[in-house]
Every structure is written in C-alpha cells, then in structure tokens.
Length: 356
Image (cartoon, rainbow, N blue to C red; front, side, top):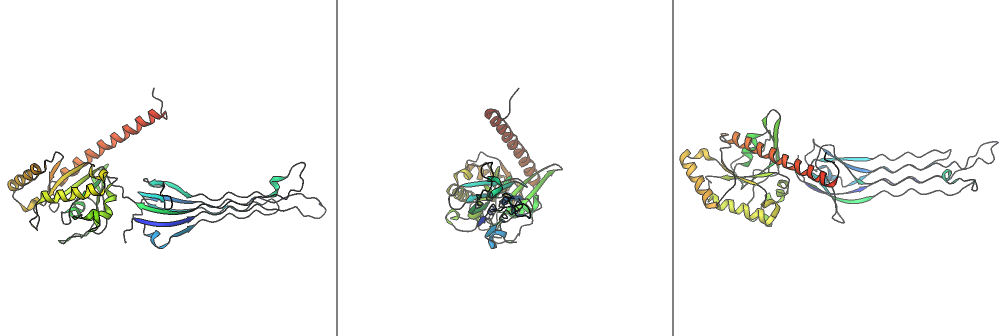
C-alpha cells in the first residue's frame, strides 16, 4: 500500500429538514387545526481514529465527503427523519486543520477517539409549534439550517516512542527489523527505505514500546534534497531519537562529519526536534576487532564532545541490541512517569482534583 501522510478534503454536513405547514383535514372536523411536524436534524461528519489504518490513502482518491440531510416535516404531526452521520476512519496520529483559516481542529492520538469536523444543520419547526390560544391557525414555520461546509487538511504524524535517525545505509532498517515485528526492505544500496515504518519492541511480556524508521537524511535535506526531510515530522512525537552511525563507512567518510551533517539538517528543519533527547548508536562494529572498535568509537565521542548516551551495536548480529532496548524501555517509563506527574500537578492547579 502506498504511504500517504497528507491530504486535503472537503466535508459537507447535512442540512436540517424544513418544518411543515399543514392543517388537519378530516370529514366532520371543519377546524382541525395545525398539524405540521418538525424536520429532522442534518447528519454531522466525524473523524474517528482507527488503529488498523496507517495511511491517508483513502482520502487521496475521494476528496468530497457528504453527510445525509434531514427529512422535511410532514402533516399529521409527523417529524422528518434525521440524516445519518458520516464517520470517516483515519490513522492514529492524524492532525486536522481548517484549510482556509489554518486553525487546528483536533489531534487524534488514541484509538476510537472521535472528532466532529462538520456539524449538521438544526431542524426547522412545523406550524404545530406556533399554535396559541389567540392564534389557532398559525401559518408560521421555520426552515432547516444548513450544515457546516469545510475544507480540511489532514496531516499524519506517526505515534512512536523512539525514532531512528541517520544517513542512508547506516543500518536503521536492519535495526528495526532485528528488534521488532517490522519488515522493511533491506539492501546494500542507498534509499532502500522510501516511507516510514513502525515496529513494536517487546522487552518483557507486558513491557513494549514503538519504534519508527524514516528514510535516511542526506546533506541538503532541509532544502528538499532526498526523501527524509518530508518524513522528519514523524519524529516530532517521539520521546527520544536514536542517531544511528555507520562506524566504518564503505565510502571511507568521517563518521564525525556525518553526525554533524545530520545535526545541521535537524536544526534547519526544527529547533524543537534538534533539542529532543538523542542517543548515539555506532553500528556495524562487527566489521572491526573489539579493541579497535572501542578505541575508534572513543575517539569519535571525544572529537564530538558528546555527553549523552553512547552505544555500540551490530544490528546484523544483534550484538548489543538487547541492552539498548532494555535501557530505552527504562527511559520511556521514566518519561511517562514525568508526564503523568506533570498532568496531575496541572489538574491540581486548575482545581479539577481537590487534594486532601
């Protein structure tokens, strides 16, 4: 399936049904009085997050989505049928914007989360509602109100705890395949990965996290070169980034310079993304002797002045991968606890929760 992470659509909610102007007409009842019923409400348009969908491709080919209008009221005090709501499933992580104003309408981050993006029109009133003691034969009724019409922009940002970052052929796809259930294409040529992949890493029976792989970045990516910059937004929701570095590049390039290239592209794309916690992971250490590998990696770290976490792994042989996953799990749990504590403090400050 082709990966689509942006789409523009138009939604039209249903119009409300008009009220009815009618009088009771029966034999031997000369003055039956008003009996016009109300119209039905128009159907609304909703988006609902669905964990079984991972792309917006359905919206690429169908741009117009309309809910049903309400039925008009009828005589004998019969109310018109309400229009059916239209519910459109989207992937978890879909952000919804008004295409005309740029206003953000919602962010669907949980399965089955629902968002109304087009409110149906209210029904009109029949003349039965205007009967009074002094107005026995009202000819007033109201028209149904039109439903909301909107042009929307849908943007998908994948939900992952850990994001993989690095140059093409650094071994990102090999790593995500080694630690999770993801099955990306793996080959010995650049740009093997053409769209993001998600994988679930199970550390223990009830402990797991989601990892995301995007196409490799190249120099000039922030200016449109290559594919990676288009998918950098998918790393914005992650708790940490794994910067995968080829410790022994086949083109004999300097790994330290390669790291600086990626850092530069991150800074030019998004300051927030550049400041996100980042772990340095030297890959393909199986191509060197252990002493040589350690000396080489220590030299890289010293030249970088790196103070964050550093790991040496072989994604192919899964050497060092298990420890990396366990440490990532501990970090993610720590971040989740911080978020829960922060949310609790905010609720206490707002008065939602009263402390004893």
